[in-house]
Amino acid sequence: MRILLIHSDYLEYETKNKTGIAEEIPEDKMKGHFTESLVVFTAVEAEDEENPDSVIENAVNEIVRVFGDVKADNVVIYPYAHLSSSLSSPKTARRVLEGMEEALRERGLEVSRVPFGWYKAFRISCKGHPLSELSRTIRPEPLKEEEESEES
Amino acid sequence: MRILLIHSDYLEYETKNKTGIAEEIPEDKMKGHFTESLVVFTAVEAEDEENPDSVIENAVNEIVRVFGDVKADNVVIYPYAHLSSSLSSPKTARRVLEGMEEALRERGLEVSRVPFGWYKAFRISCKGHPLSELSRTIRPEPLKEEEESEES
Ligand SMILES: [Mg+2]
Image 1 (cartoon, rainbow over the protein chains, first blue to last red):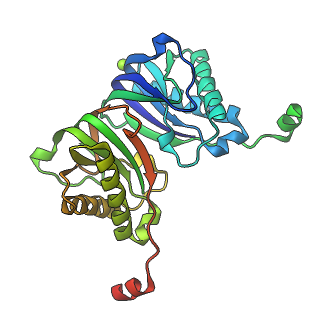
Image 2 (cartoon, protein in one colour; image 1 turned 45 degrees about the horizontal axis):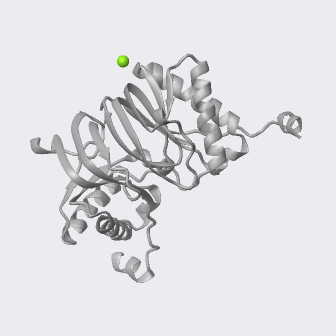
Image 3 (tube, chains in turn red, blue; image 1 turned 30 degrees about the horizontal axis):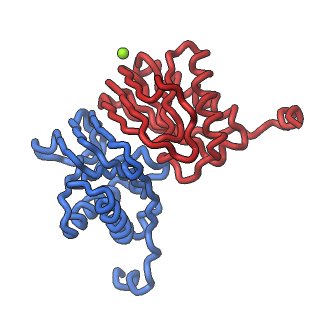
């Protein structure tokens, strides 16, 4: 997984056209407006297929750390395939993005998730302090034999 | 090289703190405001060191093609290390970014280049049509033996 974390004054989006892999969304997710957010642009990668749960856990730990450092008010997960040239399947991408949303919420953060698979217009304001733009590569842990046998 | 091309209603930036590799800039480059731009976020990569001139040429060809497709008014080159986890030296990055600026100008485009090596606040508005966000990986051509011997 590649993530780009932007500490932003605001992020606004509007969904435009659907792509072939668009998630169905309720009316209230057609647009969004967030302020004082840590925006997490996220590309789920092919190698994350091996152990998506560990990628979720490692990403969430990193996001929580940066969130505390920059003292943002909330997190916005923004699917962003353009951060990688080696993407996972759309199915795994959605599973990981939704898993991050849920895990961050369990950690007590206010979280929003921008719709997957839509063309979107957006406006963002990046604050410009030294921690306001960070990127990370998040790797899956190899599945332990025990975990593998539990699954089979 | 990784590039992210955003067809934008506007892009604004202000330089904040310098990093250790900041270019010296005149007062009038401390801020910038551009409208109807194709913004080219650019990360020059380690493998581009092999043949920077070919990377410039390949990138410029791609930018000119997209510029025509989206009918932008001008190009803004925006250095963006966060698009790659395998960067070139800062020296090569600056050479390539400046080379792109010059080559695009020679192709008749109005071009601006955002300062390298500064923390910057920025605001951008992405239009949201299907071609308004594109990413590309640009590869260097292997140096031909002739070219190599010309240099030695
Ligand atoms: Mg705050």
